[in-house]
Length: 412
Image (tube, rainbow, N blue to C red; front, side, top):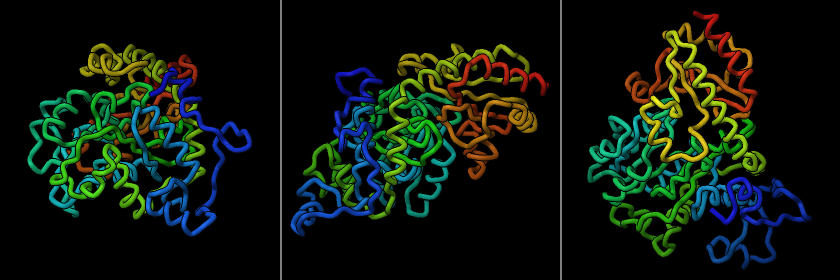
C-alpha cells in the first residue's frame, strides 16, 4: 500500500497536489479538454503522451479516485465505472468471448447472477460451485474455463471465500481469479495480496458511505502472464506486461461502451473514501454487538454473521480479515409476513436497497434485490422468504439494540 497506516494513507498516501492549494481534487466538470497543438492531441490518442482528451476516456477527478483505490487495494492500476455492475461487466467481458465459461461462487449478489444470465445469449456460460470451498471450485473447472469469480463476503449469504486457496486453484489452471470486495472493503482484506488478479467494488456502498453517488471500480494486480491462446484479445497488449489487462480495457471495451464515471460522483467518492477506515471499524463493531444481541433474544430468530463463534465461516474470517467481520447481519424470522412486520416496526433503520451507508439499512432480499432470479438461484444465494438483511450503520449501538428488541418482541 504505502509506508503509512490505513487511515493516514487514505489522506496522504497518493501525495497528490491540487491547483491553488486546494485540499481536494477539483471537480473537472468538462466533457473534453483542449490542447496547445494538434500534435499533442495526436500523441495522447496514440498512447504516446499522458493527458486528458475526453471524459468518456479519462478525467482528472476520476483519475484521482482511481489512484486512491489502487493504493488501498495494493494494485497497479484501476478503471472507475458508472456503477458496480458496469465494473463487473467490464471486468468479465475484457477477457471473455463466445464459448468461454466462468466458474463462480454460489452465494452471489442477485444483480451479479442476473448479469451472468444476460451473458448466456452471447455464448458465455456460468458454472456455480456447490459450496464455497476451494475443492468445489476446482471440481467445476474445465478446458473452457476462462475465469473464476467470488465475493469476499457473499451478499446476503455471508459466506466467506478462502481467497488464497481459491487463487491457487485458479492459477493451477492458468485462469485469473476476480474478486468482488464490496462487502469487506480493503479495510478488512486486500485480495490482491492473497493471490487474486482483479478486484471489483460497487463503490456506491462502503467506499462512498453516504448513498449519494452510484459508481464502481475495478483494480488490477500484477496479474497472470496472459496466455494468448486462452485470451486472444489480450495478445496485442502483451507488450504492456502486467498492465496488459488495463491497457486493453481502456483502449477498447471501457471506452467504447461508455461506462465512464461522472466527475461529480468521483468527487463525492473521494470525500467518502477519507473516512472509510473510521466508518468500517464502527460499523463492524456495531454489527458484531448487534448480532450477539439479536441472538440473545432467542425464539425463532436465526442470526447469521461471520463474527459469531458458531458461524461455519468464523475461523476462516478470523484468519483472513483484519479489523472486523463486515457490517452486514442477516436474520431469518420464520415467515415472509413476520419479516415484513419486523421491518415495518423498526424506527431507526431505513428501508433501502443499498448497503454501506452511515445509517443502518434493512431490506427483504427475496422480494427486492433477488426478485428476478430463479428459485434455485435464490437458494444458492442464501435468499429465503423470511430473511431480513441488515446493513449496520454508525448509530449508537444501544439505540439500535433497543429498536430491534421492540420490533422483534412486538411481533412474537
